[in-house]
Amino acid sequence: MIRNNGFSLIELMVVVAIVAILAGIALPSYQDSIRKSRRVVAQNALLDLAAKQERWYLQNNQYNGNVGSLIDGTAAATYTPPDGFYQVTVSTATPAPCPAGANTCYLFTATAIDSQAADTDCATFTLNSLGNKASTPTNNCW
Image (cartoon, rainbow, N blue to C red; front, side):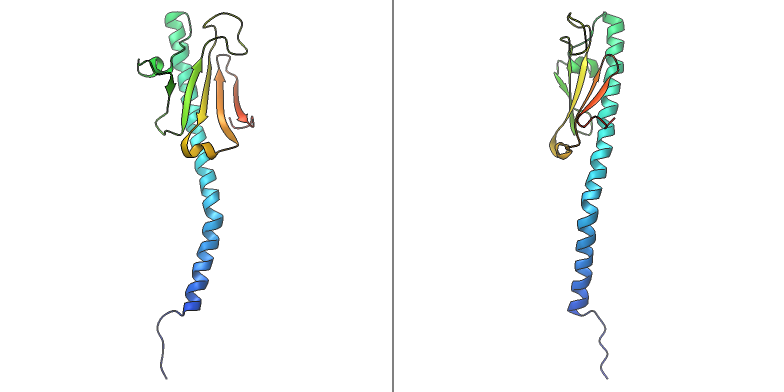
């Protein structure tokens, strides 16, 4: 009697098929979890910039329309947090719901870029000087 030590081709193909099915289920779920965790980085960046903007207002009696000067004193119009998946801009030219007059309010907008742009549930986050938070296209991401 001859005894074979090993796997048959059919057994190997069954294992490969099982692994492929599990990967097909797990990978999209994993990517969704990663996108959700990156949202928190964008939200924290907006809250940090809002605190810096309020500090600027206390020192200069107006809001700063330049994100770079809030971060590191540069003249950058946009800011990309360290993770690199959102780009933040600021508007001070009377964004809603501000009254008329220059630099009376601010509106920060974080827009998803690169691979995070595939996050269609929360493509942008906004935060204004009144503390109003919003996201598009759905408003339940904060």
